[in-house]
Image (cartoon, rainbow, N blue to C red; front, side):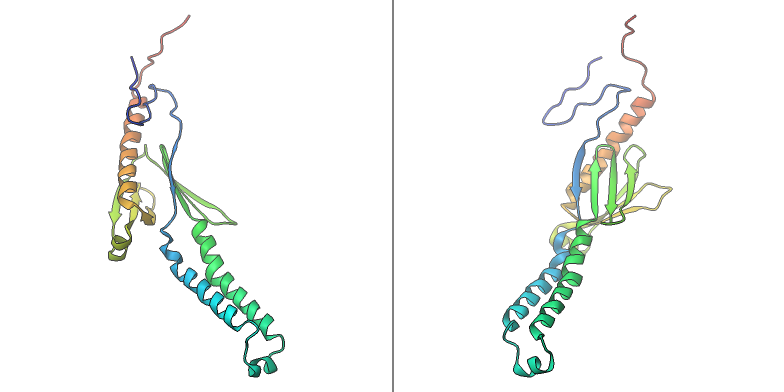
Length: 190
């Protein structure tokens, strides 16, 4: 029995009973528009500190000794709380789609991980809000049945990701069914 060959960049199907390598198809995060307000705060704080550094009114410098140092410390605290922490939270939450599963990872210090296997099968629901349509994003809901659904929020290029997930579920179920009913196709070399 011959195996299909790879055409147009498709990965060939593994032989029945053989373990297919797990390939990463895409790793994504929520759309970066969530960081718009953080970027705006960074620009505003930088402009205000740049303008008032060494240029504070005399009334303020008489009341608060080392007013420039206090201003820089407050600006650093605002940037840490409103810019750096939201960025790290955004950076630490990823979704990885492979040829076998969807993996959600979140957290920087304490990592949490959740997986949904394609071969098990799940329903893929696509939801698009008005703002999401404007940005070309959407929310995908993966419902594996007995578990709580996995929500992938603000997915960039959501229709492409949706099509990829539907294809992977179909391929995963076909390969799982084929492997469950496969007989040995390798000749006995005795």
